[in-house]
Length: 410
Image 1 (cartoon, rainbow, N blue to C red):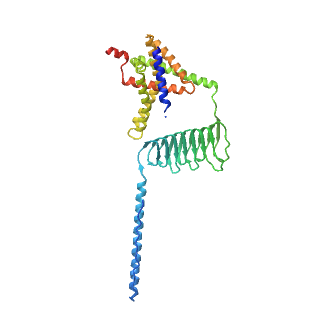
Image 2 (cartoon, rainbow, N blue to C red; image 1 turned 45 degrees about the vertical axis):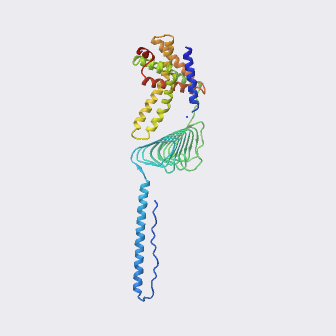
Image 3 (tube, rainbow, N blue to C red; image 1 turned 60 degrees about the vertical axis):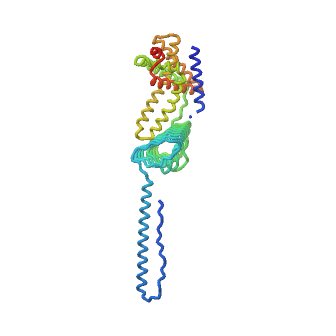
């Protein structure tokens, strides 16, 4: 039992150490008409007038030809500059500008993203900082998940979740705005309704109408809005701080949900794939470092690979499938850690009854959950359980022999 404790404690501090250090130009053709020295020695004025007329007519024809060639060159240049993508467009990177004309939907993932192009469909953005330039047009819906969002262009509907949201003075939203933010600033025009949930809402004092429809907002305090800014009704809902009863109910609900989830998972494994419990125990107790390493790699690399696959339209379904599977594995990782730990305890004390494994699994899950509630370090403890639990699942999938099965093979 002491060896088991030492392994887990040592593995936990290694995990904390690893994660604490991370996160056209057209050439002008000029016809130079040299002034010919017209001899005045001849007294025939009709000949002179005929020559001058011919020179003027040729010059006019040359100028008309040059104008036509310049217009054709400018048309070719403008058509080459406007690159139209007749399909969905997906892009991922660090810092970039989305300046395409996309006749379809678009997905952009990155750190700092600046949108200056035209999207004829929906635009989905996940980034740290997002700026919709004043020249940008999104004809359908704009969905944004970011830390900072600034909109100066045109969009149909806006759905945003961010820390800071700014609707600039040059922005125009054809329909409605749905915003969840810590701070929201509304300086642009909204043709219909605005639904805002923010810690603080800022609307300038102006005589111009900014919201043609209704304004419904939730914030820490009610703000004063000048008459004429909102064309419809204004509805304010104060942000409610959770009471002690709400907090207790929240944690109690999570506790009951955890117990039910662990119990159902364990009963499923016992009934359908009982050997998976032995494999999970073996991977945690006998190979903790390999299992943790696989868990760390899987936790980091799977999302990265999925994001890279999203840059290609062909591999987009594959990326979405991988992310769904990844989410399911993360959801079961905490429970698998508790089950594997409980199986090790039962083996240590030679407890072979099913109900004993169930009891220890539930107790382990409750203790683990209590540890995650510790202030400051609780998030690292939870991350440790999830990452190692993910490693247990991944290694168990690709290595289907437990310690007991290996001894039988020998």
